[in-house]
Length: 150
Image (cartoon, rainbow, N blue to C red; front, top):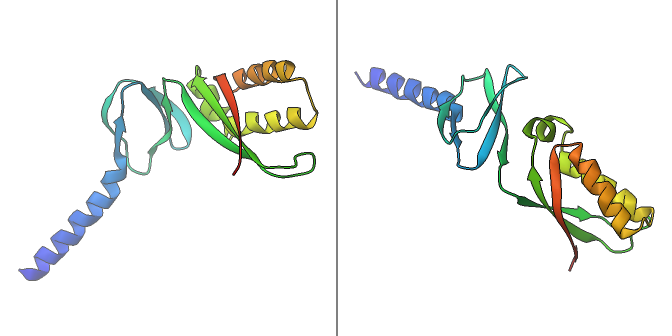
């Protein structure tokens, strides 16, 4: 009998390890993009608990419907004397573009921001171009704050 109990405990433990990552919690004011076998399947926008098929489905991205902040560091390099941090307040309007437009949409836009700074572009013009560029990746930039690194 002890052997059966040990085997049962191991089997139950393995089942929990396999099924636990398949439980998905979607919060209020959040969307989750789901892929099935590596291809976009659906977007879940209704809050609740969902079950994904193990090894077949995966949650690709959790995206807030509310504006949120993303901070990126600008490293010291040629043309940039001191490192600093840029904080973007963004709001996603197209989940598909945001998730699939680039490996990291905010990082891509941040790289563009650095290029405008290196080109010594006028601030208003640079901001307008940055906002237009961000829209190509499915989000709006609501605010940009620059902080000196200490």
